[in-house]
Structure formats: structure tokens, C-alpha cells
Length: 563
Image (cartoon, rainbow, N blue to C red; front, side, top):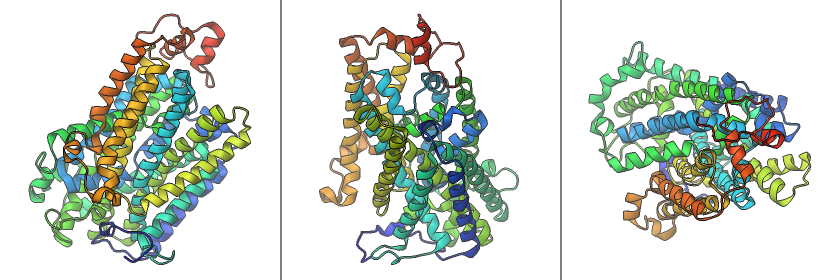
């Protein structure tokens, strides 16, 4: 390509019918218009609505929002892609992302709701009585939103190519893929700037319905029309495995056992440290609602996760029969893998409008997750850095303005990075999970479950986590942008501390550093300990009440709860 920006050749999915399609375009544009309308109707009026939706969301609605927030392009598109391209290794994503929610349910959901802040950095700053810790957490949150959203932008653009065709040259020097990145991100940023968390939550409930119906309908119809399944494709796809080759079904053919464990572990702890996931617990009415919304969220998530391997199997077989060999040289490209869900429906010769509906589900999944990421990232800048550190006297109007400007900034840098991304969707997302697991998860877990974790320990642990995450990123990811000769700097480091699973090494070290420094320095104030104890109290609190309010009013729980 002779454009102003380089484009990796594998960003053009082979086998995908890239052309303008009237009915799919109407479906997608109608869906995007609906999202914008909901954003306008539920546009924010104050910071309570902007960041935590007025703490008014019920458990089923929040569970659907959790599902939509979670089932990004990495789940809707990328998980099937990973399983198709790497077989059993892809199941690390199914196991890791699901297990993380069980840990959230048991150890963090209700406790974080009782602590009752606006954002993840808000919790870190107040729990450890440190603006420095708040700032590190805020920068980390912004980084997570940026890295995570690159994969979503890639997914939206690849699916957009199927629906709208190649508009290369519409922006001088840009390919069709790059034009689609700009268009999709512009729409997403526009509605987010209007709606805030309240509108995003209402939208995410709608987006969940769209994405899960599209995914399951696509799976059942592809399975039935191609003779792969009759009633339950999630189980019947096993009949195909012998026809798909060892690369699909034999464990650890495509990757080592160690990489599987490292990836799975990073995804588990990363799930528990993602700010846009944790903020969902601040939007609900009570700690009971927080627990139940997590249960509902798990149910809604599992509907898709149970189905993704079947879609991967169907898509792999259809690709092999209609396009070319899935494995070997050249094999299926990462771009084709990233749209395997749409490609499977297209190769099944299903009606264009139906394939467009499946594509719309992928776009809905990506937009729902970008919404959560950008709200979390903008609140970190506006609420945690601007309001709490730079300008404590900021008015609500100023806070919302800074928040919207932060969304625009995140959208701009994400769009630039997505024009030529470094990896497939799921890998890009995994880098963000490693960061969340290494830096934020230890602070949430120790902050809630060990009252003696102090400011010095938290600062030492977070800085250690950032350093340990950055090293493999520089080693593996930075070279893909043409630096250091374009090759991994240290293959040995990449083997034992891969960027996609670096939390396996980082998290135990961060825990050890945080605990060690906390033991070697002064204990946190008694009031902070009482707030932590109150987060485990069995006594219910009112909708707007927090553990800090209880302690300020009557001293809170005097002895640590044993739950």
C-alpha cells in the first residue's frame, strides 16, 4: 500500500466478501442510530450519572451490562479466532475469563460496592491514603483503556469491511480498513461523550441482547444448514474434531503448556483488576445487588463462551473447504481468523441480511466494551487526577467537560494505534489483562482482605507491577512497530515471561513486595482499618451510603469480619 500509514498485509481477510451490502448496512446503521438515541435520552446531567449511573442499576440490567461490557470483540470475534487458529491454546481464554468472574463474585463484588467510590483509582487513592497511588492507578486505567480498545477498533473495522465495503481513499492515503477504523471510532466516541455511564449502561443492556441473539442464531443456523449439528451445536461440534487436524484438537501443538498456564493465569487476575469491570459494582443499589448482578453476568457470559468453540470448529471446516488450508504455509491469516464468525455465515451461503445481523452483533460487542473502557479511562483523568489532585474545587460542569475531553483523547490515540495494530484482537486485549493483573488486582485484593496493607506497600507494589509489565511489552510488542530491527529482543525472556501472560511472574512478585514493604513500614491509620472491616460487615447499607460514611457516623465495625 502506498498510503501515508503502513498497513500489515494480513489485515485484509481472505475469503471475506468486502463490498457494500444494502440490508446489512441498514441493519448496522439502524443499530448505531439506536445507540446514539439512547445516549441522547440518558445523557448525563451530573457526575453521579456520568461515573456510576446514580447507583441506580438493578441486578439483571447490571448483569446484562456486565455481559455486554465483557463480551468485547475479543469474545465475540477473537475467541473463536484463537480457537480456530491455535486450537486448545484458545481454550485458555475461555477458562481464564470465566474463572476471573468467580473470584470477583466471591472476594470483591460486594466488598467494593460497600467501599462505594466512583472509580478504581478512587478506591486505590482512598484506601491507601495516597494521591501518588491514585495517580499511578489512574494512569494505569487510562493505559488499560487504550491497549484494550485497540483490539475493539480492529474488530469493528474488519466487520465493517464486510458490511460497507472498501472505502479506501475516502481519507487521502488511508486504506479501506483504516477508513473504517476512523468511522467506527468516531461514532463510538460521539455517543459516549453524550451519554456517560448512565447512557452507556442502558445501551449495554440493549447491546447484550443484540450480540447474544446474533451469535447464537448464527451458530445454530450455520450448524443446521451445513449438517454439523441438529439441536445442540455446543456439544455436537465434537463430531468434527477428527476432520480439523491435530492443530485444532491436540493439546499444546501450537503452544507450550507453560504458555497456556501463563495466559490463563493472566486472564484470571486481569479480569479481577480491570477498572471498567470493577466500576460496574459501583453502579448498583446495594452489595446484594452487586453479588447477584455478577451471577447474572456470569450466566450471560457463559452463553457465548460455551458456544465459541463450536463456531470456531464450524468456521475452520468451512474455511478449509471453501478458501484454503487453515494451517500450514500460508494458512488462515489472523485477519480472516478475527472474522471467522462472520466468515462462517458467509461461506454457509446464508442470506446477506442474516450475515449482516451477525456482523452487527460483533460491532455491538466492540462498542459496548469501548464504552466501559472509555468511561473508566475518562473518569480516571477527570475524577481522579483533575478533581482529586489538580483542582479539588472543580465544579460538576468542569469535571464533565474534562471527562468528555478525555474520551476524545482516548478515542484519538486508540484510532491511531488501530490503523496498524501489532497483533490479533485477542492478543491485543490480553496485554491489557496482564497490566490490570500486575498493577491493580493485588491492590484490590490486599486492600480489601488485609487491613495492614499501607501506602508505602501499595506504591512499591504498583511501581513494581508497572515495570514488570513494561519489560515484556518492550521485548515483544514494540519491535512489531519497526523498532529494534522488528525482532523480539530476547527470545528467552519471551518464552518465560511472555507479554500475553506476564502476570504469572509479575503478580506473585507484586504481592511479595507489597506485603514486605507494608510489614517493614508503619501500619495504616485505625480509621482506614475500620473502613476495611466495614466492607466485610453483614449489616446492610442504604443505596447511597458507603463504608466511610458508616465509620464517620458511628465508628463502624470494631473487629474484622470473618467472611
